[in-house]
Image (cartoon, rainbow, N blue to C red):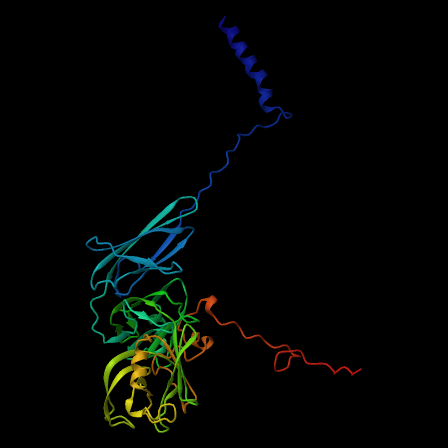
Length: 422
């Protein structure tokens, strides 16, 4: 019985073999499952690098992200106090809203999220430098807080000592302006680096709110200086007022919203001390002030004046001058100022604002760049050339068209032979 069972097993085994080895059968391979796609997480690189030391107080947290977008940024000091920060327009860095403190440790934690929802978080911890002993560049922001300015008001910063060309981009990168409603503009440096102006291609629209920050505290400026302070201001633009003074007629025209509201006779600078021609901006207004020119060329006098409005650093003002009323409208007798009657000066003080445009024509000398807030004394094409950083494409001047080879001076095709008359 046992031998029969063994024979049966052998028969079954042999009979089954051709099913596995026969050449006419289809080889059956295991079915391969599709490989799971691995979605990479975003890649993040932060600056300052982790454990950096002696970081400037003006430091920003630079973020380079690949494969995602920034979804969270948290900056805190070594006591866990959060530091406010806002991104630049291009998202390249997060700028602390106040300067960092010396010899403090800060930690920045940044999260980026990809399209798949996968997120990456990176942190960097850095320590700021001690309070600098280097000389400071003194900055002055000529844009005060909670004021109402004229439509030609440039945002002006002055520097002492002036900023060298090699350092202007670093300084300009820390100057921020925002407007509401938006009216983008550009910065432009005076050649000697003593001032930088910000304005739009056209005058500000009345009612515009302008917010300014000059975040220069602790900023390394070249090898030997640092910035002195972080300055902020927010103000508004008021009504549109403009003044035009023509030396040929010895008349001043005062316009509000483009409409003439008064003509005023003037006496300008005599030939030895002429008034400048050009576009100026009212810089200061004084009900009473004293002109003391002792020690100055062509000066040497002291006089008290009423209702004085400054136009240049060099001392050109519009002011009341009752002593020259008989000359006003006829001849120039001043030391460079614009003389008007006491009554007209008092009236004008009630009409103008700091930031109003004053244009002089027909005098013996031209207004020099930087002698006052001279941001409007040049075309927009020339103005943007003074920027130390690239100007956004929308604000760049249109390229000058290249004339056709057959064009004449006016840009029209060269005329052909005249047709014969009938």
